[in-house]
Image 1 (cartoon, rainbow, N blue to C red):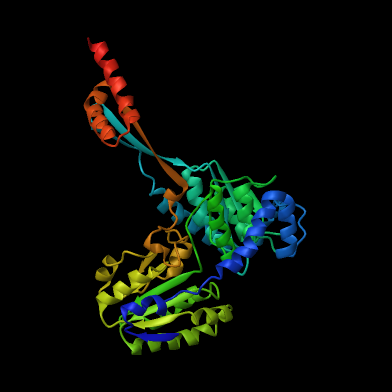
Image 2: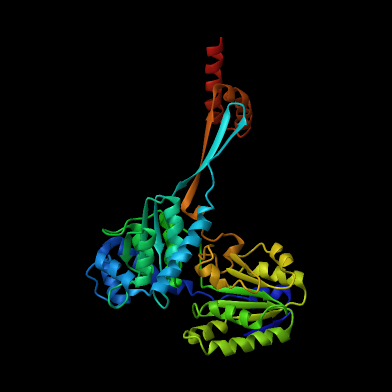
Length: 431
């Protein structure tokens, strides 16, 4: 990791730049995939399975036997862990439900707002270098709690034509039955346009590689919403001498192993502590099965020395990390200063992995600086907030003149007349 010593503010953007996507080159690959799926439907999906997943599929759906055998293939300890995580995630997301809001804003004028589920949602679950069965929990549980009418889960098959058993087990556990063996940009295309087997959805959720990300962004041009713009995983750890250097190193590596284009940042006060953490990283790295991936990610990473706590927090908010770990002595002061972060992990004994798997918060979070203007996935992501209003004759008499004056001054006589005609009707009735 390169060490930056109190970098000037005007250099932050350059010094902390994330790995850059070659957007034009990626779109040259993605756009034809979307066109082919739109035109050829299932036929294109079978063809892309051969081309990208190197498997000839008999069906796009797992059989009942595959789903049943998935449970038998998993270690009982893993199944128990998934069930514990499920309970915590359900509890925290259930608590996010908001009651229907009804308010009589003035006599005879009642306004209401309530949550209504998005009817059809698509969940993309990566299954490449790491099968993310935890993402099934993070996306599937709030979709089920919200009451989404149709939930479609897409995940790529392996060379035997099967979806990872942990993904199948978890999907079945939370009640998702529409599971499709398709990955990559073609999965996003299928959920965007619909095929003979894959329903068109209203909103697409889920992480993925740069091709999946580009496909999701393109999907928005066809009237399909997405959870958020997202890039490679990232973490920023803010630590001082009160932190445990081994813990800090482990947290940095936990994100570095996600992918070669991930980025991890350490912000600390002294070069001594930074070098201590880097030494621990080198020691722990050798024991990681994905060390080659982590090494490449570390080349994108930085240790930033900031001897002023206020400026350190300013830099952190500028960077707007997906995951922010705070392990400093003045913990509360630092936490209260955060305004740009996807999710915050507080104290020496709160690893980012807890949020990734089982604490209850959602791990689908804004990356690439989008924490400045996006929230992570929550129950709210799967609902729309619809407002209602009902006005009585008395209410229209109360509010009508206000509307007439405002509409007239905006030169919208039709708007004014919609009120005036009713008020005249009421005046006639009262005579």
